[in-house]
Image 1: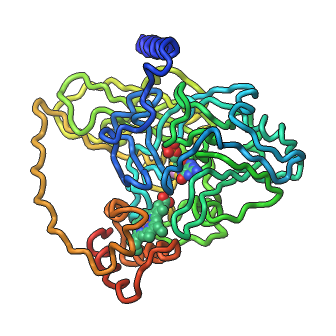
Image 2 (image 1 turned 135 degrees about the vertical axis):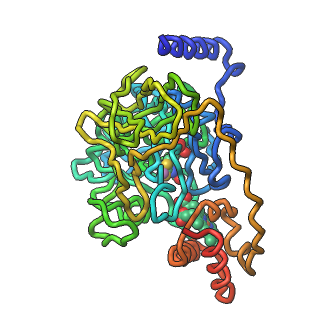
Image 3 (image 1 turned 30 degrees about the vertical axis):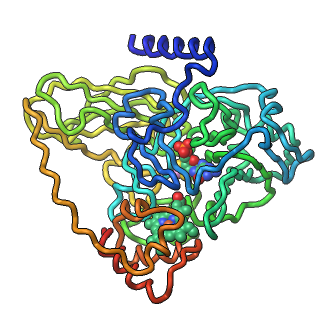
Length: 453
Ligand SMILES: Nc1nc2c(c(=O)[nH]1)N[C@H]1C(S)=C(S)[C@@H](COP(=O)(O)O)O[C@H]1N2
Ligand SMILES: [Mo]
């Protein structure tokens, strides 16, 4: 019933939009007032928990993750260049692309770093909680059709994607490859539409890669160049970033690069959207979403006693291969304090670990972790907000060294040791941060004391 209502509403909105072009249109960017802003520029915007009650994530709530500033793309000048080991190198316009068969699929877009803030010890990087993930409806053409049009050769090994975004300072350009087998899969798309409208600029207008079931570092935005390679790509974002160990390692340990492989498939995972923190005694509907990789979710189990006993949740709404499922569990809750856990399993039998599996860059977090909920007639009084921390004055040279490409949001979200801050300063110096030798110790001292583990 619920599903039919939603579909009707969607249909109605689509019909109206078609009848009144340009008059009624859905939002084409994130509503910052309803997002958690990790960084305003480059934009890293997280979807809060209540977003996990919707099947298709609306664009105004869809998370945004960009390594650099959003580029300006003019469609009349834009073209998709395809070269490398192909018979006919070519440049396609949007008109050319739209002559190819249109394909649509619903699929989860999730950042490899989603959940990074939960790892202990903490790891440098965007400090996502649950919400660098969304379920979108993507439409475009098969990458396979484009590659075949250009005459991809049998020596092809990897497909290299480059977007229109420009690196800041001396940082390496965001370029990513996927293996030819994934590129030729019929569900791997180049999308020009999201949720039934033109792909918004924050999400990669005019064209982005869709690699369903894989983490979104492969979903390259603002795509303008595809190069077919007959060798393994050596770029920074493949060889240094987005790699994880083949096996769990003790928390906080370094891993030999030879034991690291690129992040590809997502992990099976679930999130509890409601209740948040408190509910009244009586019937309580525990609800959330669950998603997986290329193997769909088969079940979600819920515990209200910290994992001692489990009940099967009801999966509702539509099932698609790559989309997320809404699930619910009706619970008769008596007064008390509870630890709620949800645990998803996929058709391949993969399930969420009950304790953390740490890795050095904090990728693919999917621990089934307890969420504290109080059941009481009255909402617990909210603790008074502590007085604002006393301002620490900026050390000399800090603003000049660190505030040109981004502001302090990037630093404020981190909780790092002195050694980790030292590495961050080295990384940023390598990218062009003008850290004066005489200022470095004071900057390191400030960061290590203010934003510590
Ligand atoms: N060109 C380009 N593509 C990109 C990125 C980027 O910085 N530049 N970020 C990637 C990462 S790490 C993620 S998580 C997703 C985020 O997609 P979204 O902003 O549409 O949510 O885009 C991916 N594609
Ligand atoms: Mo990401």
